[in-house]
Image (cartoon, rainbow, N blue to C red; front, top):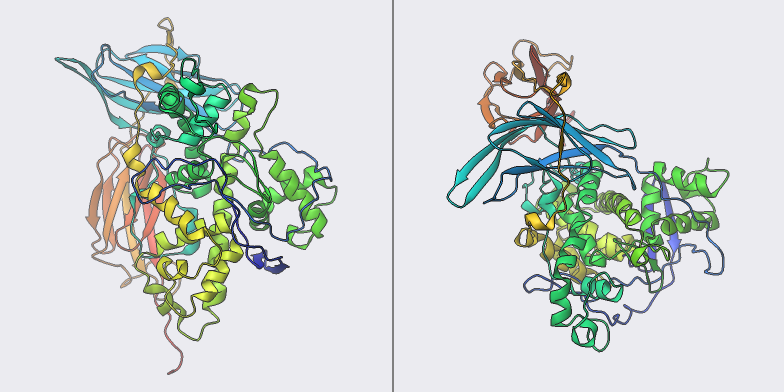
Length: 605
């Protein structure tokens, strides 16, 4: 995952820590197993798996046993439920209800009402028949005791000459998302690219990509039956599937690459990493086979994480450090950055071991629940890298004689460039990125200039390959057929006392958006401080987007027809200010945007 150059510099908790690292000679020889690209030229994924040279972090010798610890507890154990309409035509109309939680070995039950009939699904996904246009109201409950939000959907059924078509006209569900790296980078002007979008449901991440390394693993481990294929469906070197092996493995290949999508979606929402970036990195690093590789350092699981990458996370996230340290050492009162090198190595080693999904007693030799749980930590390592990228850029720009703002603002697309910097740090190491920044001198800090000064081999190709995959993501979107989804059927309960909490409750409230310039710095709007002509965009779940412009500093929107308890968003268009609130049943909701006056110079320069 990470390549380090001759020096590694980290900044965390206000402490600058410098490790002197032994030089190494170039990249390693390629592994014999090629990795399929599955996208048109140029190359989109690695031709070979990431190989990581050694840096001089204080690694524990292989002869020293590193204590194993359970995977650090998942900090986001929420239960999520959602509804999906199948693509028609259908012999009989239905919708599919899903529920999932980032906790292994947890069963779920979905209960609700459709057409005044109460139903219960004892599993997920659940195929719920809808004979006519209906309102479906449901919630999920897990064996861990958690309960999902109540969800209400308006389902429309139309009969055509070739069968039934089912549509979702509205769903009382909106998952808010914010790119944590973008917030940290604090860009005021940026585009909203398709590769960074947050899809509202996990199934929108499903892909159908031909992944030769994954197919090879599926055949070797007996996941698919290739009996009858010449040479067992593999090339003579057992490192590439034949045409017969690929054809026999296609269904399993598609299912395998999409089994992590709910966990990718959940990690994306809670950690703040765009989900397409997260899934693309997993594809490039492991092709969704969570095995471990031994190059110069151990690379573990779906994201091929190693101790160097984990070190970045432990420096940036004291909560995870405390979780891991407390399972390894008796005294964790000292920050990770100030601990002795041997204790840091023990913590890193225990953490990286906890992420390994290898399991000799499990089917196929893998603990897939553990692999799924590790997805959130891949996202957190990415977030730690994007934060460190910003620190390094700030360190080197503020020491330049040229104007930092001038140097940075000429970048055409800083959002894309900073994400490419983060990918470089994830793969090749923080020091590799820092050296490239230093070598870029006083040129503008965009990917074109920085990539020309990357000294660690393979870094530029890795980033460009990931980026090509990312831009082509939607070309491989996949919608499974009815036969491919194993679904439970609902049980209908006798008509009895309805479930009052599940009846849709629509709001009749008003939203008043206020904008003012706080010239006297008293925190409240006064006469002459209201801002007129500010364009405002209002969006609520299940309601068409509304726009307006402030007059006397105010613009009003109606919440009529919006489900109580859902989220609504107010955005000042072009000013990149957004507020989100929960929809009440009635009354008025005030959303106020306060602007501070610009700071004026106190003396003539």
